[in-house]
Image (cartoon, rainbow, N blue to C red; front, side, top):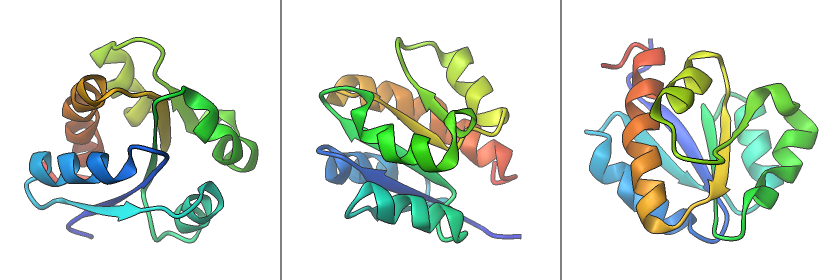
Length: 124
């Protein structure tokens, strides 16, 4: 059993998102900075990442390639902040997340999504 989950971040806000995860994860999350959406999908498909989070301030366009390759059933676009909906998406097997995340909404999303991801992997 592994002791960390790996999340690859893509999009304009990927560096700040990775830093925020490192603050919130208590060492149970490895943050990876994706160079491109294709690279992120390959990391996920090859088992080198567990999740992709698209951090783009313009909307969910950053998820176009992951959605096309992995299928819509593996992706979740956060339309409005709803903690239960986010938790359910993680528990239902969604592995790609994105939205038009401003820093405050990204922080709220991570505060809900990270505990659910850790729980799903037996790390809480």
